[in-house]
Image (cartoon, rainbow, N blue to C red):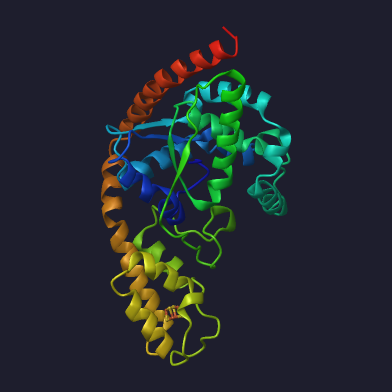
Length: 320
Ligand code: SF4
């Protein structure tokens, strides 16, 4: 996950919620991918250290266990960059250019004033492939929007194995079942759209963001019959309020609940949901050296695995 700013609820449900369950089923490796952050934000790197600290805090306060898993920062293990370079030699340009999210993002970020027509941005899935196969990972937890990247990772892996020998397993996707959480304006939740609810938001901040959520635009008065299926607040109720969601939907359609009351009920549920996370976060904040200890230990453990793989890769490519 990129340390590109404050972690939000969309990130949590898109990935972390799933990771917290997977840590009990698999030997997991989780990386804060600071090199990936550079692919779209290379001009001002001053916030990277702070963002890494915050991301580690978010992960640990959400419940990722550093004893069970390897948790580390990508750039602390130089083998990621090394394998990325070697993979870039064998990957046809057309494979990278045809990834559907490439042109979409290029356009979106270009419109936002970012100059990202760079080699690094095009090579993003290449670096992601290196991140995965460096540890010979067989399973990768992904959201649906990352499936094309993983397909490409599998293609690059096959090509490497065909050229130099069967070193890497082809990574399989493990899809997160959680639906995509919309942002408060109804589009996908994203920091670049400014429509997120931060994972570390205070109760007051959560309530203010929920108040700003778009609802059914056809509903003017409380008694107007609503269409919850087009409402952002309702999409959140499905996730944060499963016991009341059917009731809320029926009342909305019948025009017997107002949007203000509906939003208040949602804000209460989100505040409750994040209460335990905040308690863990505060405990970690009182011991700032602990985060560095965890990331240093994680990098050492990751490096051992990565170095062994690179030894095999170099032998296979006659680079030793
Ligand atoms: Fe949305 Fe609730 Fe208003 Fe219905 S009552 S439109 S679900 S906010």
